[in-house]
Length: 277
Image 1 (tube, one colour):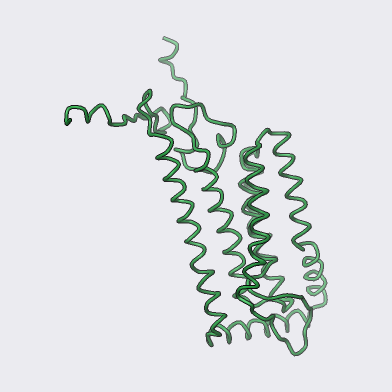
Image 2 (tube, one colour):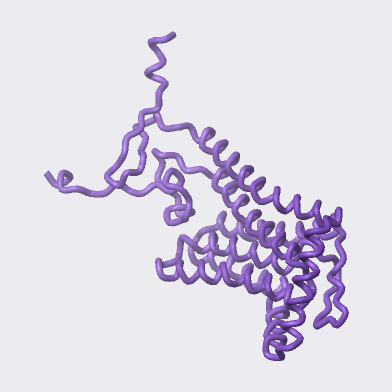
């Protein structure tokens, strides 16, 4: 038995770019790569789920320091909005523009474009399904936590439903994360920088909008941002694990230009002068 062990070892070399490559049929099995990436997806999901769960527990138990901080922040924020008509008008317009149905309609159209024009079918399906899950799951969390909206003596705006987590913030973070990952392979370097900037600004402005209008506590919007971005990242890693790339197989169009690690994003070998000799 011992003399057979060397034949079972995976031999890995490196190409000119420093990326690992497997030799022949001794590449790491696809099942191993799939399992590792699925575990990574679960890990990222837990990483974001833990603080959201802790925040939910804290607000359900009415932990006094957090409640006092939330209420003080709401009072200060609404005072600023009440004294600034231009800010109030901007916040109301932003609130209407970021009603979840509008960004989701736009994102769904983008999924269709990515599917039909760029032939990234599974990537588009992944993005659409994940966004629908995020939209509905945050509604479930609201019912579970059952937190009332902020009570302001002189309110500047009103909103129906429960408060935790912020649906606007959760959906904005989910859409920003998922859409960025969806379009990444088809963007130029400059377009990627712009996309990342927009993907950061959009949910942050939305979160601030909810607090300054007095319809969500700061802890609501923090939980929403963590929930939306965490779900998007964990789902994407699960998507990569579901359809892994083997080292000895040609790279699929889904991931040749994505932000995923090198082992998920193999590059073609670089030509050298030795090839012409």
